[in-house]
Figure 1 (cartoon, helix red, strand yellow):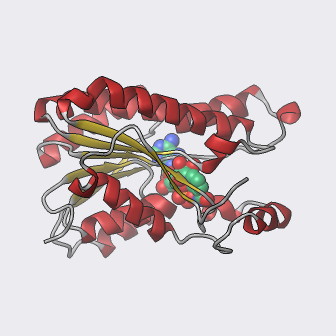
Figure 2 (cartoon, helix red, strand yellow; figure 1 turned 135 degrees about the vertical axis):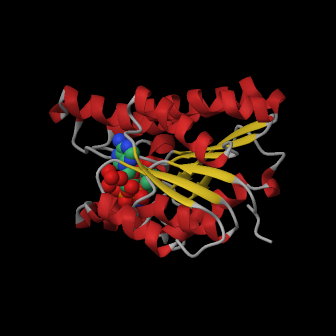
Length: 248
Ligand code: NAP
């Protein structure tokens, strides 16, 4: 029996990268998994086909995590399909990197909307269901950049730091209902997002990682399984870094 056997999971941004890895691991551990994407429909369909033979159900939804209305509808659809939501992973995220002097209002707003407002949108709408269940685990994907800051990423760092304050507050609000809320802070993970970085930035990251390599997305997914499962049932309001010891 898997660590997440019978659990009903929703993961935002599951069509690529870390989210995709989490979808695969959670299915492997026996969960029913719903995931979202915004535009990568082909990748989403491929993933559903790949996992169609698994024991758990797999469902993909096109849903913009930054939209309050989409989030409300999504939770309704997942509850209808699965009968509840035990685990929510707020993973959808984007970057629009540039130095603050050059950053447009649009670049600021887009990153805050997709990375931070999304976490409010989904968490707010899932709480009613989790409170009725008197159980739930919410995992919000931040970044080490939200802890240390990073030149050229003021918008991204602000969104990821915001996730930490939000999650610690939610943990305090709903702990008495047996709902946990934790943060995963990945370091430098090999996905499309880090592929965009220039060589100097990559070299700088690598020189500061004691384990001297990037992580595979599956290594972040392993930590997410831990925070989702009963293995972590006395852990809430915490930030777990998956960063190879990176100290920026
Ligand atoms: P990625 O490879 O670029 O994948 C991002 C995923 O999010 C895709 O499935 C994308 O779907 C989805 N997405 C983006 N905007 C969305 C929206 N508005 N609504 C719904 N889905 C949306 O990124 P990643 O590297 O896996 O990153 C995943 C998370 O980890 C992000 O929150 C990121 O900030 C965080 N993180 C990553 C790293 C790293 O080194 N990679 C480090 C620290 C933290 P579409 O293609 O359809 O848009």
